[in-house]
Length: 276
Image (tube, rainbow, N blue to C red; front, side, top):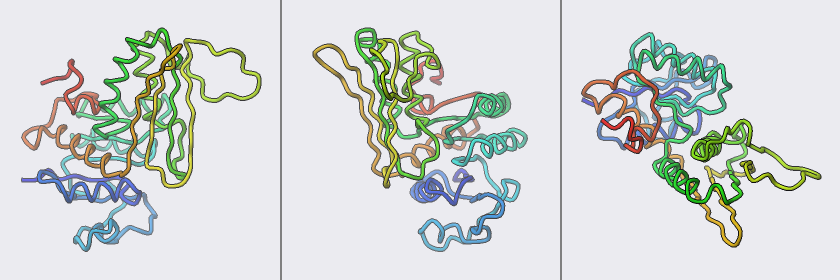
């Protein structure tokens, strides 16, 4: 029997991509399409809204109105916190791709991992999470002898900057080098900035057009540089990764994982500490 998946934020770009990914999945299906209260999409057919043809599934404005085994959430920080609390109370796993949480929102969100398995990922694509592993290696080999800069680009509609993925990349590099990203991150340069501090990690943000997502981390040493880059050409790569995470949280439909805070590298088997 297919795992029944609810999608919160169904009216957005990722909601539509998730509907397509679930249509392609052999092991999961869309069972609840959730939008914010007051949305004009409430009552519409989910398949038609996603451009997939009539499905018979009506879009609703509350998780309580949906029947599901696991939730995939790409909404806003406040909505994700509330949705995670609901899932925890109901004993249902949740995969969250929302970014832009402040410290208190993230604390409240992760508190729910004591009750249910919760996968929080700044990026669900397989390629980006492979890049995280490559960044650890590059930071160990070159990090002490190179200036490190992170450049990211997204479409004009993205509301947070730098992207959650760029921040995650910075965290991977900083942790590998024993640095505190909050102390060494530089998010903008203008005017007479003085000579660059080797320990800093710079971020540059580009917003425009319909760019799905591009991230590059540059290790700039004397006489050479290494660039690790990921470019996404379709949101389907993120959506299929999120569906993969949802199935993993459900134990591929057998029994849910133990309660805990997981990320996409756990799903892909890249975090040795969580290998089962």
